Every structure is written in structure tokens, then in C-alpha cells.
Image 1: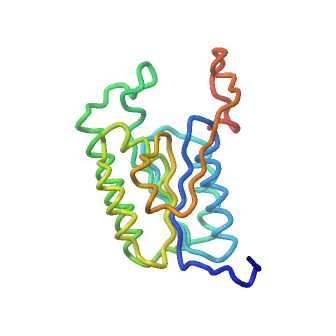
Image 2: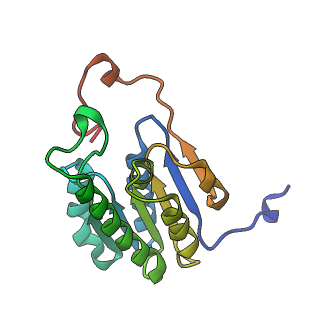
Length: 189
């Protein structure tokens, strides 16, 4: 097939999933690429409520991009993650936070105001039962036809693959966490 035989799409759905590191980092890189192209981007973050480096980065660059970059942080922390689970947060509070974050994502994706909507850690929210599979299906199928969508997090539900254009699985080959070393600031968060 010759290069001129290829077509373009008005928008795509991307997924970054898997047990390996780099899903959020890939979505931040995608955000940078889109902003560098003059696009309007909404970065919606599920799960993470603690301060991580991508929050500091987005706050630093937001004034440069003004209304072209919207950031919403709606998580309450890890849920059903053993010792890593958020302390003093009820299941109802986790569910409500996920639902409010989801509503924000839907508004951004449907509005046509953004060229790219990134839903960081949404796959985790579905896997944890804080959102339903049908919620994500509605988000994908109900988005503005010119709005690209990126979904990140572990345990992406393969039932949704039929709606996805690009899916990347991050595979861990080795990580020092397995040797009882904590995550490194600037590398892991």
C-alpha cells in the first residue's frame, strides 16, 4: 500500500494500560504534543489526590496556554489497594469523587471545546468498581466527533477495544519497587 493510500481521522481514542510504568507520563507527553500543535486540551485525573509532579508541571505551564489547557484533579487516592489505599476515605466518598470526575470528563468530551481529553487513571476507577464499563463506553461514543480521547490506567477492559484506535500496553520488565524500594520523585511521580 502506498503512503498516499492512507487516510486520516478527525479524532482517535487512545489507551495506555498495563502493569508497567509510564502510562501517565505518556499522557503528559501526548498533552505536550497536542498543545505544541495549538490544540485545546483537558487533562482530567482520576484516583490521584496527593501532589505529584505532573500537577506541578501543569500548574507551571497553564499560564502559557491559558484557556487551551484545562486541568481537573478529582481523585481521593488509591481504592482497594491494601496498605496503599487512601486512609479515612469511605467507599461512598471514592465513588462520589469518581462520578464527579467522570461528569467533568463527559462535559469536556462532549462540548467540542477541546481537541483532546485525557482521562488519566480512569481504567483504575472502572476496575475498582467506582465507574461502570458502560460509563466509559458512553464517554467514548458520546464524545464530540472531532475530540480525541486518551484513557490511562491499569486493567483496561478489553470489551471496549472495539471503540479504540490505538492501544498500548506498558509491560514491566523490571522495577525496583519489587525489591522494596519506594517510588522516586521525578521518575515515578
